[in-house]
Amino acid sequence: MLPKRYRLRHRSDVQRVRKQGRRFRHPLAILLVSRSPAIVNRMPAIAGNSDPCPSRFAFVASRHVGSAVVRNRAKRLLREAVRVQMSDVQPGWDGVLIARQATAAATLLEIEHAVISLLSRAKMRSS
Image (cartoon, rainbow, N blue to C red; front, side, top):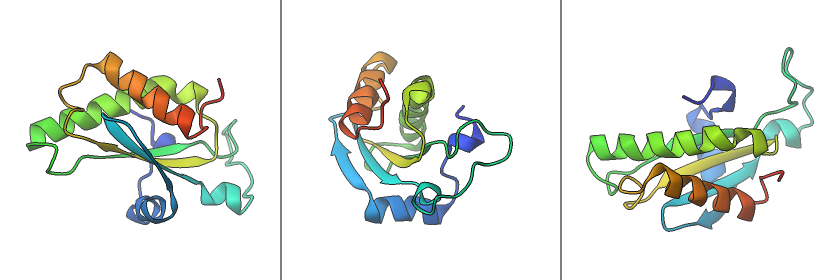
């Protein structure tokens, strides 16, 4: 499970990223990214956090992907792939990962490669 501080939890944040964000496509997922408003507004660091504004993610799977079981599996796989990569993600970004039909059938390793590719193309990875 991704810790709360790394999750986009409000519908308004997800809608903002969908409207204003840049889109990066991969056969297994789509990544929408936008700068976090905290970075844009130059908000100070949250008390107790070493990151000034950690990158946050939301995970979406439409009914086109499959049944509820298939959609939840796709989101779990994407969530785990992002959780493993969080140490390499630059702070200050908001992202929405959208599952595609092939996501649920893919292995975790394939999805990790897809997430790494998407984060690199979006210039969100520090390494």
